[in-house]
Image 1 (cartoon, rainbow, N blue to C red):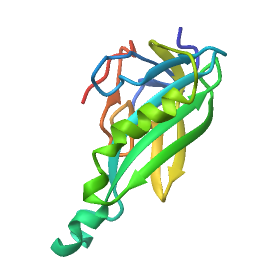
Image 2: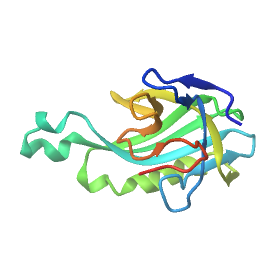
Image 3: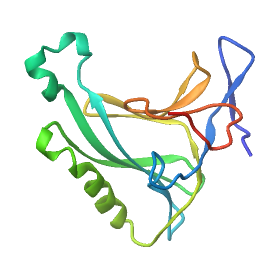
Image 4: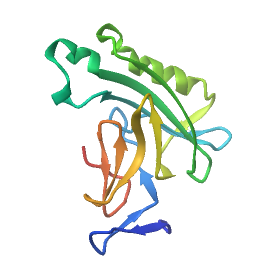
Length: 161
């Protein structure tokens, strides 16, 4: 199933360039599936900090956090195509992220929620690193921003939080 691998610099283990992502309803991979035309999608509700915490004064702490709703789109083979997103740094709008990701998914038309297999990828959104990014040090593939979930051997679609 996983035929594209990359040797880790530190050990003899391998990190796949394609990974299975298992859909777990009402959890981090709830918004995962395919469209009627075969495209794959991965919706993520997450956050990121614009600056490291040690650079932020207490009075600016709430303005340092960005809340995101990100919809990643892939071709039928799991190759990254594009992304759509919504973000806010306003405290009163942070709860809108779930609503926004559901709106973006609704715009895809008829969909099927299911497990999908994707190539690793990286994009930058508002200066923040995002995507399914290989981590040589931990021998994993991590979902950014905020490194919320991590995929590791045996590369079976399950993830750690």
